[in-house]
Image (cartoon, rainbow, N blue to C red; front, side, top):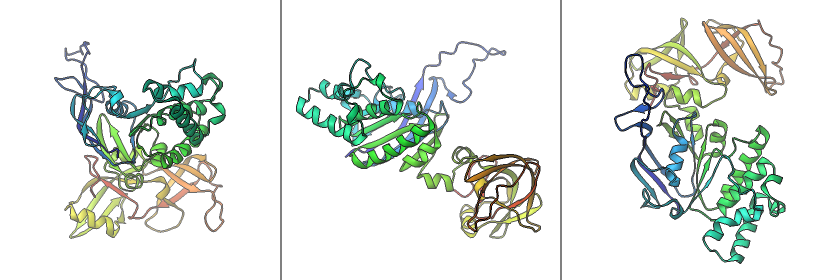
Length: 393
């Protein structure tokens, strides 16, 4: 068993900023809270991770995700809260006694050792018998497909092969928890795709709980059983990849998850009795029954809103009074699809169009300057209050 509980975890760094502003006030960090105690890098982080679950922490640089991981590893002191592994409080337990392993972004391999020696090193430190070391190293090398490189030095390996060695060195210990801090960020796009697939296969073969940190939402969406989205040291939403894509908790999550980013419009939510419609540019959008039920359950009243629509949920062409109109400003050919940037409703609107639809009709002939009509249904809109929160939840 390897359950991990993070309860009200907090990390505060001393505020050593001595510079004064024009008015004699201490300068404040732009994205993190500064209190009398110091700079709050992680604030009230709560997460329960089940045995063998794969949880991904994702967010922009400086959001506190790596700091959280390092607190689990014991590389950073915990300023407040409780960290439990298998029900045991480990706040003050040394890293070597937590039964965790960590894979770093920089590989951190010993250049003077062979691959075999690098992978065997943590076992030698624990004085594991040599025959058991050989067995575990060979098994890990087989799982990761690096058996043929065991006698090579790291400098003779590619980036992807070095990362496999770093992962192998971690898994030979058979840790309860495997921590991975942006392990693929130094690889090119093709290698990242390959290594993502390798990690997915790896987690099926080893009995370990994973905590994985990345700023890449594609990694988060493809790897995680659940993903934790962070911003400015605080958790914004926790859920499955599909949940956070379909039901973002706020504007930040909706914009961070999904490529290209969601389109946003200033609109009005109108409640008439128990029915809701959204009004945009003088047109009424009928909200789906499912969304209406959630709005009604929260007793949402008429108000100005930010209406969000993902580019892939906008339909082109057609006629009628409910169509919006725009002019193609930029056309990005992506192979199977085209990303169109339209000037419409006084702003930029991004639409994804498949180059060939299910009927075999090609849509790759749209040119810059073309006039386009588009629409979207009330089942795909996201309704955010002016405070940024999703009104449905």
